[in-house]
Every structure is written in C-alpha cells, then in structure tokens.
Length: 247
Picture 1 (tube, rainbow, N blue to C red):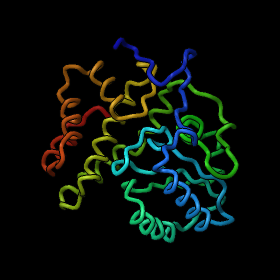
Picture 2: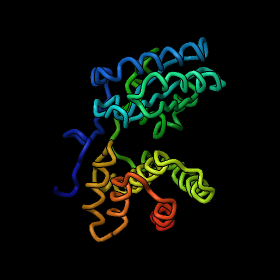
Picture 3: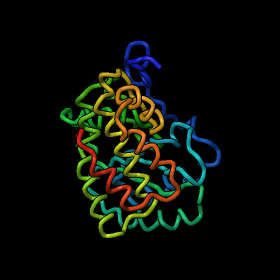
C-alpha cells in the first residue's frame, strides 16, 4: 500500500460516511430497534434524535463480539439511570451484542458552531440518523483535519489514566482491556491521519496505516499482538500504556 493511503475518503478528499440503516445486518435489527424504543421511553419529550454509529452501522459487526453504539441528542440534560438499568435487562435477551453504548449530548451544544469539528464531524461523517430529525445535514462535508483529530482524541489521556488506575486495582475486565488497546490504536492513528489524507474507521485499518508510518516501532506490533490474545494480563497492558509518548 502506498502513502498517503487516502483510505476512507472520496476522490475530492472528503471523508466518506460509511454508516447507513441499510447496512444493518439482520441479526442486529431486533436489538437496535428495541434499544431505540428504550431511549424514547426513557427521555420522552426531552429526546430530539438518535443516531447509529460503529460496526453495526457500517454492516461489519460480528455477533457476540460487537457493541451497539448510539448517539442521542436531547433538548435538556437528562438522567440516564433508568435507561442504563433497562439496557442491562435488554442485553440478557440479546447476546449478539456485548454492550450498548450511548453518547448523550444536548442539541444546542451539538449545533454550536464552536463544536463543528467535534459534534459536526461526528454526526455528519460517523453516524446515521435512526430516529427523529436528522441534524447532520446542517453540517458541511469535511476532509481530514487536525482539529477534528484533536477533538476526537481529547479524552485519550484521561481514558489511559483511568485504565491504569483500574489495572492497578485489578478491576479491569478482558473486554475493557481490549477496548483501551483499540482506543490507543485509534488515537495514535489520529496523529497522522491528516498527513495520510485518510480516515480509517476500523482498528484493523488503523494498524495497517500505522505500520506504513511506524514500521520500525515495536509498539504497533505490540498493540496488534495484545488484540489477538484471549487474555491480556494486567502487567502486559500496563507496560504497553506506560510506553505511550506520542500524545
């Protein structure tokens, strides 16, 4: 593969939104629509719209291994306690997904021009509307931009520090360990995606591109090896996280 890869962008250089309700595989339709109903019941009149993102939205999910990821826009701040409790019960009935994640934000914050490189990019290029008024069309198409990458990486340091703390307390599950390795891989890729004129949406694609730019860096192979392991030890993950110096 040549550099720049321009993976995930069109001929004009704009990021391609790869999500669509049409891409949802049949085995995930039931849990998706039940989760949507849970959100509508929990937030009622405060709900504005619901968006699907991630592997289920791209049609690349694997039953028993993938998450269901939803972005929810509300009019005012809401209490998600009831939604979380109902979701736990829903998961017992639907083993095809490991967990259901809700990214909840206020409509006014999402539409604030100051947040166009965070919310604007997220809704326009990484999500597809599955309920309510689709506000993503209010945002322009974007090309890979360092401001977008920085916005998507803004919680990376806190995520790593939180992971280290849980590891030291021995409270991190295998799924959580895999999740932070994936987060780190994506975060590292986002430091060079503008140079690569690309926007990769999978960890596998991020790793391929990282190898092109950091072929001599053992941390790329180290992260890939951890993701292949059935059981990542606490010390292995701590060593990996402690070697991160590119943030």
